[in-house]
Image (tube, rainbow, N blue to C red; front, side):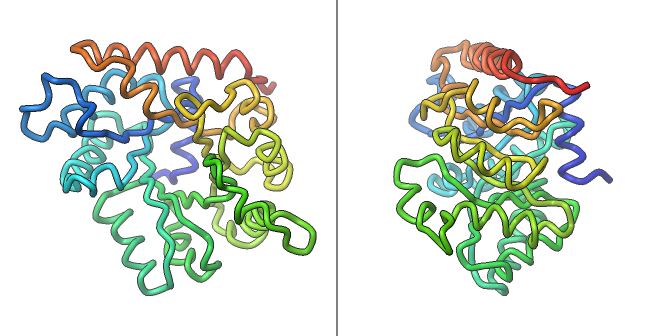
Length: 275
């Protein structure tokens, strides 16, 4: 059984893609023809997945978009469907959990056993012992928040600790301490390309999940230039709304495919291919 990191590397190569589609459904924005369907979120996701699976390196469902409308069962079905129909594409559960050890163990079970995710996003604010319940699942990816894409990120993440901003401390702790099993990744927002370059310099070839292109306005070329590894990979560049809602008509799935192809093309045009 391959690890998340291995599956990610294979998907980068097989689909020639660093694109991750964020499966963040908003029930009020689903196409009208799905509104009356049984399990409309699952049906929407399924159509998007089938239209894009050969163009992506990962899918990333965001937990709140399901929990808010009591659709956790449709989240389970979505992840199960990806694993069954498109097993080469790994799934990241974006839940940003962070809690003390015993509770963190329950959250790890939720992510990896209940939902069957291949990786999960986590918040490191409580320190290393709060991450250990996830990290001990050595075959799974543990994606640690580092420099997030939101405008207020600097309120805490830029605070100086011994002369260095906190996000750099998180990056270094991840690379030097928490990644002993080789299953860590970091979240660094596309909206902060300078910080992305600094994190890449600190963590070597560790994969980075980069949200913030598309609707949030991150510059694709800068993301690739500042974040890629020497072989032109190392990035999971996530886009949600600009792909999911490329059309709200009957052609929503084909429009999502076109948007994904466009993003993949923009990314690949900026990549430096290793020898």
